[in-house]
Each structure stands twice: as C-alpha cells, then as structure tokens.
Length: 144
Image (cartoon, rainbow, N blue to C red; front, side, top):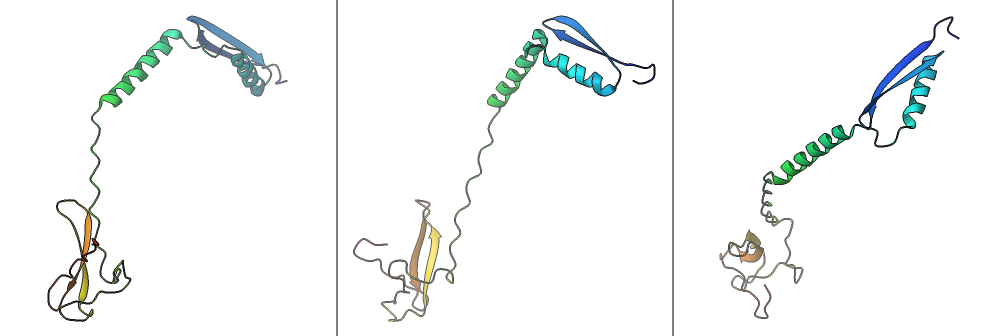
C-alpha cells in the first residue's frame, strides 16, 4: 500500500446519448489503468454518441464527394522514344549484318537512321549511305 494514500481516477464518457462517469480507486497507478481498461472493454462497440457519429459520417461523405468531383489532373504524354544511336544498333535486324549500298557496293558508309513517323507516331528506322546520300531500297517482298 502507498501509506494512507490511494489513487483515484474518474472517466467521463457518453453512451447512447447519456453521460456516464466511471470512478476507480486503487493502491497503485498501474491498478487504476488496468481497471479503466477492463471497464472500457465492457462497453458496446458503438458506445460513441450517435449524433457525433452521424456528424463524422456526413463530414466523411462530403470529403469523398468533393474529392470525386474535383477535376482530375491530365496525365502527361509519354516522351517520344529516343532513337537508338548507331553505335548501339549497328546491324540490320533481319539479317544481322550491315547492308551493302547498291550504288557504292560497300557497307562502310551505311548508317541506320531512326525517327518518329509524323503520321503514325511509330518509330521508324532505315539504312542510308553517307557517301552517296541514298536510302537503301526497301525489299520487294513486303519487308520494311
């Protein structure tokens, strides 16, 4: 015991619109908190004031409705794909080799040029000879 001192706690709550006071007396603070926890554990789950619960529900509904009606930010368009540098993609994808220029007869000056098609927005790539400045003719069999 704590000499002739005892601890006292009073908790005020509202249950179903009625105020309730819970008084606890004990020899130690630990006993007080344990008793308060035990008592509060006996209350029904919806022990809060119904009017307060309704006010909180209406505030939540209004907040969600405001968020739902707020204008949505437009997503930023994806950046256009960057062309792959020649050093990273030096080979023809179909044959695996640098094509030979039909005019010059060599593949030493061939460069893979890449761009984004203005009409379709699709990435495109074609071979061009840097010596004679001519594009490699497209294959007749419906290839590129």
